[in-house]
Length: 100
Image (cartoon, rainbow, N blue to C red):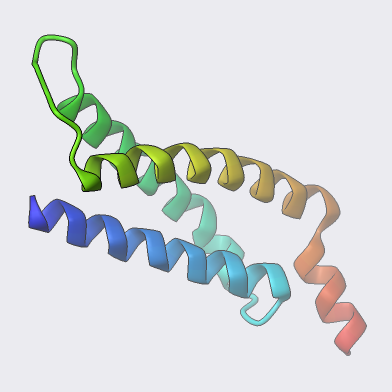
């Protein structure tokens, strides 16, 4: 279980870092990896949720389960909307053009 938590936090913080750097235009390479990382994280979260909470098993929520459920919902909602907004308005390109 500790390996699952560790890998989860690594992907989560890497994704947040790439979102922040691409959104404010610090790293121009970040948007290229964002979609791949978002898909990887979504598949990882979905697999954990299916494995831990399938209907044929009794379970009790522990603090990590609560964190992963909440962050999965927030991350999926925000990543989808932020990626769409960034793609529609081309925010990193506009920031780079303004600083040049």
